[in-house]
Amino acid sequence: MPKEEDEEHLYLPEKDEVLGIVDQMFGNDRVRVRCKDGKIRNCRIPGKLRKRVWILEGDVVAVKPWPVQGDERGDIVYRYTKTQVERLRKMGLWE
Image (cartoon, rainbow, N blue to C red; front, side):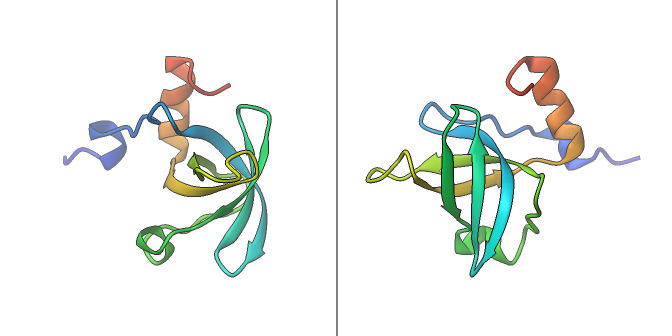
């Protein structure tokens, strides 16, 4: 039986990235994310994720804040599956 992708690889946020949960969908590939650092950011879904990954409200995502207006805006770099979120909880990265 082949291993699932979740078992093989878990994307860990880099030092300049933050975890968050999608709070609201705005359309036009924009979402509002409630980040773990307590800030609410208007985030953009970049083209490399737009067609490959379906992002919905309630999904846990990794966000890279912009260099300018980093407290208000950012880009989504990864969406976690439910099993990956459980692994993040076991590691203490997500509550």
